[in-house]
Amino acid sequence: MLRSMMASVVGIALALCARCLAAETPELPLVFEDSFEQGAGHWDPSDPAAWRIVKIEGGKVYNQFKQSQYKPPYRSPYNVALLKDVIVGDFVLTADVQSTDQAGGGHQDMCVFFGYQDPAHFYYAHLGKVPDKVSCKITIVDGAPRRPITKNEPTGIPWDTGWHKVKVVRRVADGTIEVYFDDMKTPKMIAVDKTFTWGQVGLGSFDNLGNWDNVKLCGVKVKKGG
Image (cartoon, rainbow, N blue to C red):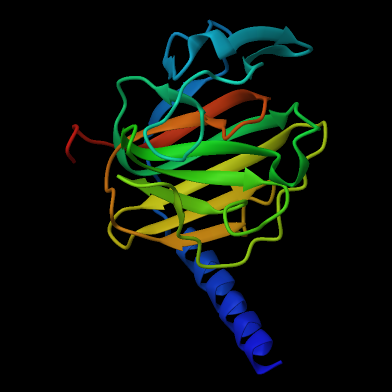
């Protein structure tokens, strides 16, 4: 009982702290945005055969329609589409996302990648339906299989057939990482880590399918190596 009460207090404190940090995030310049109306030429997928542009009501979207054949060097997501030629330190990334793989079970997911330096060194936010030790976590891949670094206990991502909004905030100086889902004021996941202070951003999933649209990246552009 005492342990449960302490965990609740810690969770509340983290959420309140994150709200304060989010309010203090300075305005960052627009670096890139993409609605995919002109195709996906700005993106570099791990397996181009698994991605395509499709037209839906209201416009075009970036559709990951089958499982990638890519095999990462360490246990980590298979489906990764990186934004080309843009490296950032601090950033705020927003996007619209739709999960189209309703048979994904508890690990039904979509992922956002950031701090991506190479296939063995990056962060990703796993937007998993049911949280467990690896699902619905902020995760690091650092020359070894994925390792969760989330500080709070997320309640899971309520996937349905509709579109949702995701946001990732990164502040290099204090190591803060915040992940938002639909509610853009209160973070769903929180982590603090300074391992990677620069890198590419990307979209994808661990092993499920989905659509992406209206990507917007505000941030501080840096050179490779920070």
